[in-house]
Image (cartoon, rainbow, N blue to C red):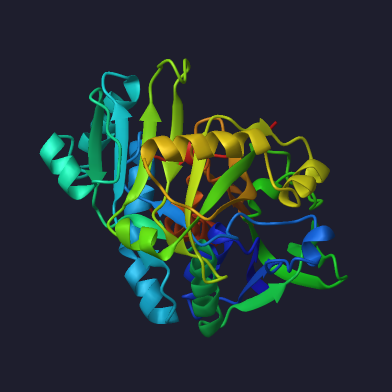
Length: 398
């Protein structure tokens, strides 16, 4: 009999398991499938968004609440690396390039002021050219550097670190996919695809974009929109890796112009070494994604190469941002992001024994540890341990 069963072994779930199992008086388990092998990708229908080597982490955000969540998570990265022996954080900073006089500039500056986020204006020609000679900055754009410990993380290694510490603290890591959750005699019966049953006093659901899908439970469906994302990966030769060695993460918000009448937002990361030993620059585009319809649609998406037109657009955009970029090949990755109506994750105690922590709204990687901490504390004690208003994170049901 467990005191807490965390369902979902991704970034939110593994963080929650670590924080909950830090209390030696609690018996905790974490259930989730491991990353699928290429062969398993063909038959699996539950996936996760952490199958990657690079995700942006930053403090500056248009929403001050996200700044708080990110700052608290960043504070603990060194501790997690030290306790696990797994390095996952590269603090290269995050550069925002935004067209002047569009609403996003004002929103960023107001949010920075609201939570005392230090930012540096590096827009002057001398400063920008000296620091980033390989980047393109137009006359009508402003460049703001968030150098508050952000940069990028390896989400695969972060999850591994969280699980390793959880296990050292006595948490049972159970590899499996939960298909049924039912409360009987004041306890939850958690059944897996393999036919196993786990009994727990409390349950914390952290199933990401798969909320409302495969697992049958008494939980009412949440309002959560899932979008199919495609990122392009540009394989970078060794001499380009050296040339771009000082490149930070970049978030580029373009206003309306001839090329993009409705404006467009992009993000890209510096060259990162992937598990195959090669270096890649990853780029993604905001606001161009198609909604995922159901579990079968998501399964097919993860098994695909993504949106070919979007990959072509990303190639066009990276050439605009990094003129003269040399690359050997272009490949792609797919994932699914989960969004809530107000842009913040659901962190809510549905009843005294059932809690949810889902929906990163495309930002989950950068604040997953704080989401996990808040969810674990809320689940076990009913306490909301944050300066942020709890009502902003309440679950909204269909």
